[in-house]
Image (tube, rainbow, N blue to C red; front, side, top):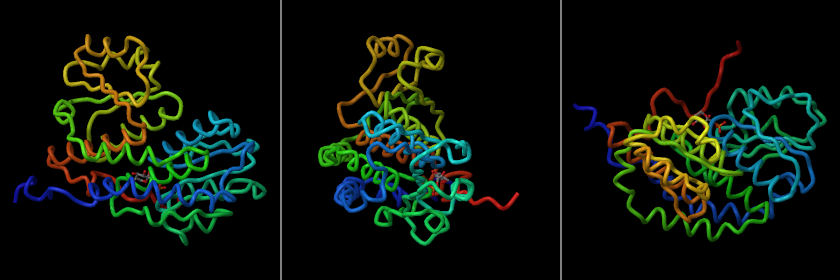
Length: 303
Ligand code: F1P
């Protein structure tokens, strides 16, 4: 049987991508109930995660600080400094079993309040954290995270006072639109963001790598000219998850690439990236439900 014949036309990944607007509305609806466990306004906060969860941490950290709720740092769990005084540490882990998160929780001073957002309560991360927010309704069959991560971010944005209704409506529009042909056939993607969407740009790039094995990059938008522009050429897409800096679209076009920007909320626009990642994967005879070299959770033996 050929590889192509073994790759089904659709799977868990696409179903989970399509379910996001409903999940986001549900998460926004529970924001008030879980507010006591989440960082209070004025607290100095660290947020940590791995992979997708790290990029969600980055997005939330910048959004929280920009909304005036207090200094907020985001770290890859393996790189968080232990000596800084935080009022609360928030860890993000869909699986609740990621080794680096567990190591971080075990090394933090016992006096610092910790809270975990997870899809699986009762797991080691949930047990080790001082408080748990259960988003099991958004758990996924897929290895590659889509709806859990975005639902978590929708909850956190709702907690910051944002109205998630229009964001979910934007995602529904994106889900109903066909993907542009130039994107399906692109050879390389550079995702750009500003503020909270810098983390989202990294997540978009990760989705295309994880699901489809594509060459992708991600930068703060104003960094594009400081080197990353050198890879733009025929078959490049420069995907802006932010307002395009003056003149950048013309520079991308002059280099032979396509600059893509839409007016949708960046979280809704991330859904377009997820759809593309799944479509490109299948077009390349890869099954996005079975990404290469990846597992649902990275669990390291003691070493
Ligand atoms: C995080 C994560 C995923 C990644 C991979 C391994 O897991 O890094 O983002 O796609 O499958 O795990 P978690 O701590 O959020 O469960």
